[in-house]
Length: 221
Image 1 (cartoon, helix red, strand yellow):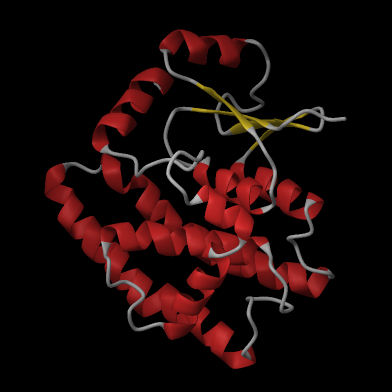
Image 2 (cartoon, rainbow, N blue to C red; image 1 turned 90 degrees about the vertical axis):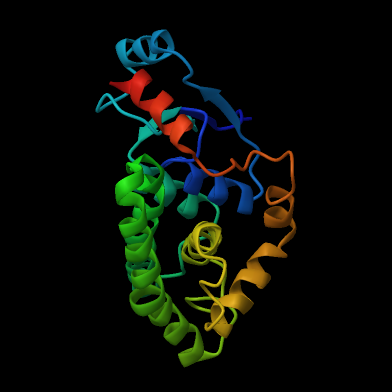
């Protein structure tokens, strides 16, 4: 039997957190090998594990996968979170790309200097409330189903709900005007596997702070 997936990243959310969310939602137990020192980073970089000399990297099913989207797609395919046909997969990918665009802004937010943060926070709030959240609200309202695509849980639902949590940490009123998104968040959060992941003491990481990101920069640069 294959062992648990092993995740290699620094001890923070960054670009690994979406992978943690997806594995957790699929009910997959995983291990983490944190890169905590420059020596750790030099070791993994020199042993041939990293195709492009960068992380996230996930050891799974005998492979050492890098690139966040490739990892997410493999996990989604393996655990039936990627639609039933090409059309559904195209829609799922389209939604996930939109999620990723906004989520990237929340990932890099902690590294902005104090004088820039206020502007960046305004940009996140504006794009969330006026571009991305209305689009996803419209999709859910248009078909009246429980999930974004095919009335079946997919990576798009899971990653969208991760995004909702991330944006709400910066703006607690972010989804107040979006009842469909509120319902989706509640629905996904109540799935037993996700509910467990959201409990204190799970492998879900707290928000990255400036100290966390600065430590990562020291290790990786």
